[in-house]
Image (cartoon, rainbow, N blue to C red):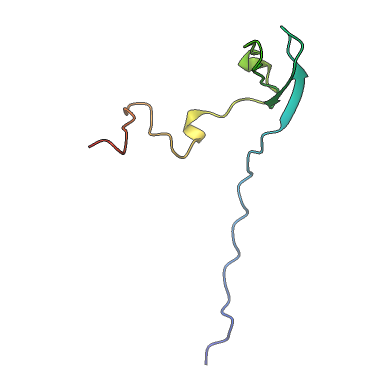
Amino acid sequence: MDAWPPELDPLPSPAPVFQPEITYAECRKCGTLVAGLDGRYACGVCGWTNDWSEGHRPLPHADDDPDYPGPHTTPRNPLSH
């Protein structure tokens, strides 16, 4: 008779999950308190944005996105026939 529960191989360690952090700053143009992700901001009052390079960590690469189709494919609308 087989032993129950069966012996299983251990599961692999999960990959680290990217967790963006909500950060706050004053708009450099009009002074409004703005919220952003990882130090990247856009003001909804006056339209100011800070440069992407001012963020707290590097932006992910397109290849890191599981839905990225690749560099040589044209995105296609799945609803079109």
